[in-house]
Length: 286
Length: 286
Image (tube, each protein chain N blue to C red):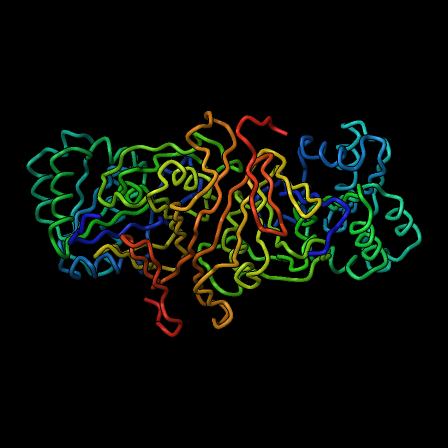
């Protein structure tokens, strides 16, 4: 995998109505504990943080919500970049903000909007180059903002009792961490089926299910779990009976021999080697 | 494992309010498709089926509900055995019904009630002996009635974002299939954490998560998946970093290298050998 010098912080989302259809109209509050990690990784309360509420259908409210949340932590250099079109992503204003930022934070909402309005634009190029080249540059995202970090992005597909082909909708994400497929609100919304189908489609990628109020700090090809919930890692390299390719849409699928890890605060996973380093028991909560 | 001649049909439950707290006050409707399998395994519409609504807090309504459901399928020899205490389990009436039944069906509700009011009574003994010795004798159960078939029974523990020790409450079940730990409503209620903790406690047992409207036909040491949803199999024999024993209650847990299978209608699993036999793709829905 290509070594990135920057830092990614995908977050599993938190505190919304828990209903898929309403997802794009709700605020995604994230806990101060998680947000504190974002600020720390960005360089502290004086760092320049740019919030991008593009995924949301209520970008103004979401932007204000983050301004308040970061201010509560003492941050004094926060701005909101309210991109609503590809044209917005090409403005001098947008480009300058992204060039100067120490941290860019993507809100929740509909991850496809991030692809459609930011993907393949100048700010996407700058974000990518800065992430790969600049040590200390942080891209954080919650819910939709976390999912969009992948190359093979889960774009939709609600929780379902059945495991059928075609239930998950895949789309192209920003491609910042192409080795991962990221899902969020994992436990509350019962998204086991959709991450499994995504892994069946792309068995060489690692599928991650992030619980709410839970995130990852990804740097140096390794992630560390932060927050109060669990992260489930699906490693599909040794799966057998993966009948995804030959089945018709809507047919029940089977997938066997999926290697699964359940990680908590402080545990680490080497993305390149696909290997877990579990925290010693006596370690404190981070 | 001890070879049983009879048949077990645990079912993942269906059609309730999806709220743990209300679980014991709701009816557990099960789909005709699944119920049809129960009737067929029991020997057809003339077979003697005894419904035990003990787990439910509304046993009369639940009993009537099943009478209606089985009648819809053409069954004409159904009775309800409304056991509400250990004393009820020792009556001549109860013993005679269980001795004569071709199939006993346990309703949903609170699985601990099954243990407390039927466990270690005469009818428990008769059920166990008949299940192990009599070919064609069927014990079916939905939701609580499915979970109670295990020896190490999940008694409670709601869905949680975090994977912490002590979140799952274990209790003794009827011990009909001691090789398995069974959870139900698995997807809708996000019960990934609690089955994982149960498997961490008993890593030699196979953990099963049954989706709603989904069941298993267990006979000859093998189960076959029936219904519309998925069954998730957690094989913990090769888990690493299982820190369950040494952690204090409430501490976040980690568990790695859990082998996971996701099975659908028609797939089979050899419980003794812990081996999957996935259905060929051209096979029809059963």
